[in-house]
Length: 108
Image (tube, rainbow, N blue to C red; front, top):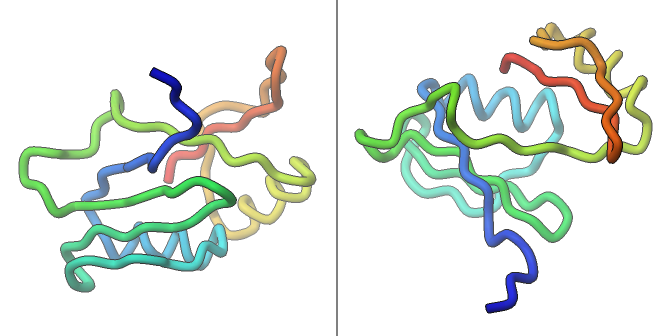
């Protein structure tokens, strides 16, 4: 078996309007495929060659601190951090350098 890339990464949400506001207005993502309505939906965002989906459609598939994670590569980390903080995004850890990247984890 040869895996070439992710088909999508899915993150479960409890409040679809709030989640869409964050992904579309804070991060600037444009929705692609949308199934459902304003309150209960599956929404896909194309990010480069990848797809991020958010959903609250399945009653037995709930958000969890053990749930999905996704990392976004940005051109300028410090500028991105400043913009997110100016929009009220809060973070659970301070910027951290790893052997492969510099990260920050938000609480949104």
